[in-house]
Length: 270
Image 1 (cartoon, helix red, strand yellow):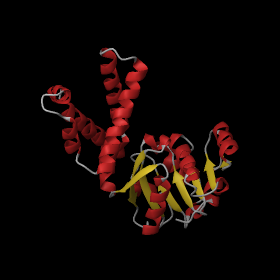
Image 2 (cartoon, rainbow, N blue to C red):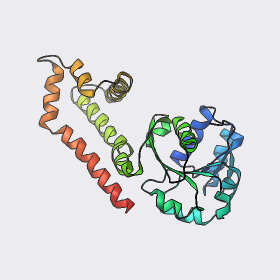
Image 3 (cartoon, rainbow, N blue to C red):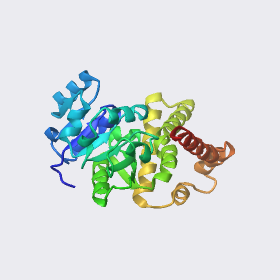
Image 4 (tube, rainbow, N blue to C red):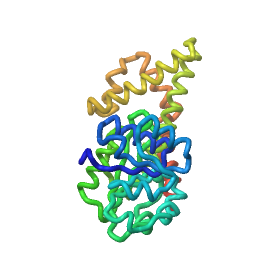
């Protein structure tokens, strides 16, 4: 990807700000080649002062100065935002949408014919550089466009490419998944507190245990069941705990959570 490209970000909420910081930290471009717009002037002023990016409350300013536009805005306002700018300002620009649940066809209706569009589903872990983002290409997006999206979102974590038909499942698994894992971490810590550990130590043990287990899955490439067996000695403590989890239906519960979240994503997407 051209590291001298100009990136525009409409919306400087958690994801928008995380992308700005990720792009700068990865040295994909300098602050003076990032253009951001939002309705929150105070937030824009703070980002400009700290990061040296260009800011405006006018979306047309952002679009008119950038080669790649990232729509980091709420799903319900994406159509009005696109309709508020002149269509010609979007010609020849790569548009990347992170608006959850908004399908490619719904965005393309508000773009010039033949517009290059990519839909991305990141998750909240982008705020700490540990996101997993799924990207899907619109009808006119090129391999170069996909590479641009992979590079930008790779600055805040890992990236996978999927057909758009899988985006609801992505939302149910990795989009909603952090909340499920937060509950697991809290529950593990509660178990430790029940057995006498101080709350702060229990929470650190629980969080680092989840982080370490996830790293082992990613870095070793082993099936989770194989890794589980590495820890599970005959008649030991771990198998006793696993038996308790099976009695409580942990795996079915987690599967059902992903299935329910996926179905809700389909409902919201129409």
